[in-house]
Image (cartoon, rainbow, N blue to C red; front, top):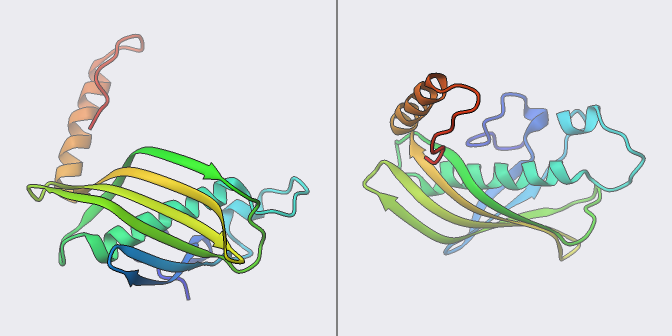
Length: 170
């Protein structure tokens, strides 16, 4: 049964991370599970035998969010995962066969309890070789801080016309 904590999915068919566990000091491992009714499969058929790259991206994102929620966020807190930069490398085709997700925490810092700065690397491996890597530069925001930041940016977005810009950084 896939673990849904931190994946932000209501439909278990869309959860791609299962059996999440800590496998080292800053390393986490999970099984990639692709349900036949996953939203990325039910409306896609280009004749290819390999798994769509967007499903791999979603799996890496779910892995990063689930590890952050279950292992990196302070206990009893509610944090929301927000990515600022990703670097994606497709190394080989991923087939609908058993595969493993691994996440390494390359860096983590706390900004006075408002958010966590995260530098994460997720790898999908199949038959012992990597098929994809995805690096994340992310923040895990305390939910109250995120809501206030979103509200402020929404107010600015509504205040500007279509040709005006503002600094979108969080």
